[in-house]
Length: 113
Length: 111
Image 1 (tube, each protein chain N blue to C red):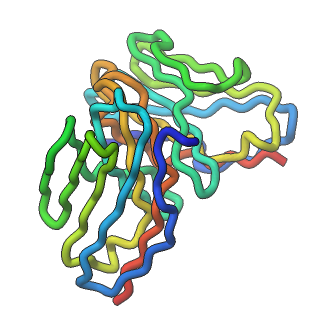
Image 2 (cartoon, each protein chain N blue to C red; image 1 turned 180 degrees about the horizontal axis):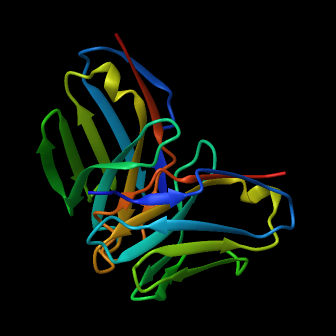
Image 3 (cartoon, one colour; image 1 turned 60 degrees about the horizontal axis):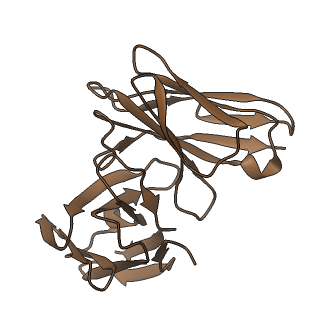
């Protein structure tokens, strides 16, 4: 049983560029949440997708957008990258919008130079 | 002030010791409390999940929640070198609400 998978594992982008990160949820899960984890900090909630709609959003600018596909996989897009966007981006999957037993992927390490 | 405060450590203990990890919070609406373990360069792994106040035990791990004091704890008995990781507390107002994490405590268990 595959867990949460994220791609790519590492990425280096230049300031001002755009990036797309991908996530496939754990089998049987239909909800995907995205988190940003800066070095030495806990994950910060970006947004949650359930039934192909953004259901909740944290305190992140509109440069951060997402999408959920009919197969429940999800993308996180970040436009106009800033140096401060360098972080580990985590995807968590759960069932029916329930976040309290969420399973995390291994993350995508984004470095903006 | 952050909603969830967690002592960052680092915490270093000998193998076999009892470890106590703690978080305090300010949002009285939090009802669900979780502990995650995160190994270096990996995603967080759910260890314990509790609802409201009380204790929950799972093997060597015990989670305690004291809502009156806005304080939660994770105890690890008979700690092992494989327990060396960063431990994150997380909370939410409802089962479908977003998780709010502490900044994590880095634990090293020395053989």
